[in-house]
Every structure is written in structure tokens, then in C-alpha cells.
Length: 597
Image (cartoon, rainbow, N blue to C red):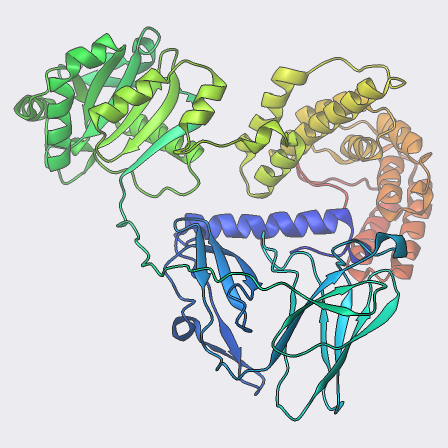
């Protein structure tokens, strides 16, 4: 997905990345695995133009969730061993290479550059070529930094020497700074240090043997049971249910004065029965800790089940639970389902039992898929209401440092990623959250800190406009673009969007030809604007909207000539269509969300 900066535009790289990420997200929603059992793989070059999968044969095909790979002669026996990193346990694995015979010929070198000669100390980018008595085949390696996803192999360059009839004569080094140097006296079967400007190889010290005992991988059984402690509690919508007498009850109102555990259960579910019995035996303790359990039956939501509220009440009594209870309906189930989807990336079905821990004030703080132990519930209750940092710490099973503290997320980038995947509510939420903390009127652009804030707030409001365009809200989009312009008055993208909307909007309250032309003409004062086909085509649309069709025709002819020079035939066709409209005295009209390509 990554592209070289000199061969792609920023928009091209961003669009491609987001499209690929959106495709990946859809695959996960469809059931594909992204982080679960992605085994490491090994492929053997057959020498016939293809590769053979030898993952299992070589020992690579372990049932771990693979990520990184680092290569090193760890045991100093002349062959390369492998270190794996995994997303899940075991986090680190070692594969010792025992394939080559002891008679294999090899040599390893470690480079040490000289900063005075424009080469870094670790000599990244330097190249080593071995010279043999018979120059029938080259042995060349370049020292790289980074060898894959979050991986760095050893900086030792390891060479297999091949048949014994070729004697190693020297090693020629082209250092990263450009200098070349030859080292003689290397002997095979040893490790050598090559220091720049020394011209002499130094044998490396021998390391003591390290014993790493083998061990079997112990993987947990796959299960649907899960505890999801939210790192950022969610404000619940209005939740209600009907008790067994048919009277409406509000979970939201109850949560205004106490924490609430909403438990969904079924009469045929054995774990549900055991869980409700455990809740009843600990009900006094739970209520003393400030939580009320509300047990809601879901049997009747299955069209094949004919259970009545009375039947459900008797089943709950049989299970031993005497607390608040009732019947869940489709709306409640849908709202809780949406809460899960807002909290976890991959979710398919809601099991029974399933419980939702709602903190006082109506904040969803934990989700328990499957039975939850009372001790687990009590532990989570102790951490409720302690603020955002406490929620972050409780969300993970081990201590650590959250990167957000050091790498604050860009709200516009997050919004764009969500919008690309079609999640418009999430795209808006990241912007709203940012504005709640940082919104301010336009500052003095002469003060660097205020200018920086202006740029960021301008970008946030511009992104709001993009979301409104996607939702066909032309008036709202125009308002957002105009607000963006208040923070950055000469921002060309906002000027272009405003002029285009005013010229082409379907909403008659938005369309305004004279204003469109005013913004477009101001935009054309920007450096390079008169040679930009996109900006010129907006100007042409503005001329047409202002009933200046001869100017619209002349501008579009220039656009077409620029596109011809740039060999962009698809865009030429659209411009030719517009040219024909302008010659007929017609303006452009696009459906809401249509933007100038």
C-alpha cells in the first residue's frame, strides 16, 4: 500500500491506503481472521520459477499469531536461526536451525563505520562483497535497518561460501559514505569485525554457549466467553423494558442513581441458571457495593418460542433469582448490540447469558459475553467512576503506557479513515470530541501557537463539510466550509468547495452564482491556480452560474488543453460535456455530494 513520495501524490497514497483498510475491515466483519491464527510461513525457491510452501515441514507452521521475524546466528554455529514475535502468546519464539551439516562453509562480518568519513557507526547502507580465488559467482550483501513489520535482524552479515574449491581471498566494503576499502586475512568458519579506515579484519570474541530449552505451545481453547472492559465508557441511549406485569421500566432512570447490571438470559440456558443463582446469593453484597441486577428474559424474541411473561417469571423464580426482572424487546436488544459494535471491532452474535455493566450516570463500562463471576464483577465495580485514566488501566490485563499520551491522535485523520469505511457517525464523533476540548475563536495568525490552532480548527471544520457532503447536506456543508475559511481565509480547498457548491448545488437556497464567482476569483489569485485544471473548472462553473457563459466557455477550453497535455482522457470527456452545456447557455447541476473532480 505504501508508495514512494516521488511517484505518488498525497491524495493518491491516502486514498489507496484507506481503501485497502476499508476492504480489510469488511473482510473481518465477514468473518475472516485478522488477529487470531495468522501462522508464520516459509516458501522454498524451487529454481523453476515458483515457490513451494514448506511451512509445516520447516517448523514455521505453528498455531501462533505471527507478526515479526528477525534473523541471526544466535548459537554461533555458522547457520542462521530465527526469532519470531507474535501478537498473542507466546509473544516470542526461537527456531534453532539444525538443517545444514557441520561441514558447511561460512563467514560472518560486522561493520563499524566512521562518522568522520560520512558513515554512521553502525554502517547502515554499506555493502560487502566477498572476493574468491575463482570469480565465478558474486557474494554481495547490503546492511539494512529494518527487515519487516516491527523487525530488525542482526547487523552481522552472514555468508554461505559454497563449494570448497573456491578460496576466500578478501572482503571489499563500499561504506555508506561512498568510500571503498578491502579487508584481507578473513578465515572461513569465523566471525570478523571490519572497522572503517583500518584495512584489517579483527576476529570477534567467542560468546559462551546459551541453552534455550524447547517447549510446547500451550494455546487456550477457543471460547465465546469474554470480558470487555471499555477503555472509554459509552453514554447509553434511553433503555427501557417491561416487567413481568407489563409495566414499562427505565434502565436509564435507574442508572441515574445506581450502577446497573443488565443481564440477558434464556430459560433453556444452563449457564444462565447458575449465573442468576450466584447473583441472588450475592444480591445483598452487590447492592451494598452500589449495583442493581436487572435480569431480562429473551426467549420470546425467538419466533419458535411461545413463552409468556408469566412463564419467564416462573423460570426466573425456579433459578432462584428474586431481584428485578422483565422481558427484553427488540429495541433494547438492538441498542445493546450497537453498544457492542461500538466497543469491539469484530462481533457477530450476542450470546446468552450476556451482561452489560452501566455505571451511575448512564455510562456503559463493561460487557460480559458469557457468564461472569461475582468476584470479577465486584473487582470491576471498585474501579468505576474513577475517571478516564482508571478506565484505561482497567481495560487491559497488564500494566503499560498508553501511546495516546505521547502520540495524540489527529482528529481529522481519524475522521477521514472512518468516513472512507462508511462510518459517518464515527467520522463525526472524533471531530465533535476534539471540538469539545479545543474549540476557540480564530486567533492572531501572527502568533505561531495561535496560527497552529487556526490551521487545526480550520481543518476540523473543513472535514465536517466533507461529511455533510457525503450525507447530501449542502447547506450544512457550505456552513462548515465557511467556518473553516474564518480560521484560514486563504485556504484553497475550502474556497474551491464553497465556489463549487454555490455554483452547482441542487438546493436553491444554497446556489448563488454571484457569490460563487466572487469566491472563485479570489481563489484564482493563489500561486499556480491559473494552471490547475480543477480550480479552473470550478471557475468555469462559477462563470456559468453567474450567467457569464462566454467566460465559462473560454475557461473550459483552457482546462481541456491542460488535460490533453497531461494525458488525462477520462477527465477530458467530462470537461467536453460541460463545454457543450456552457455553449447552450446551461449551468451545471450535481446531486448532493457531487464534487469537482
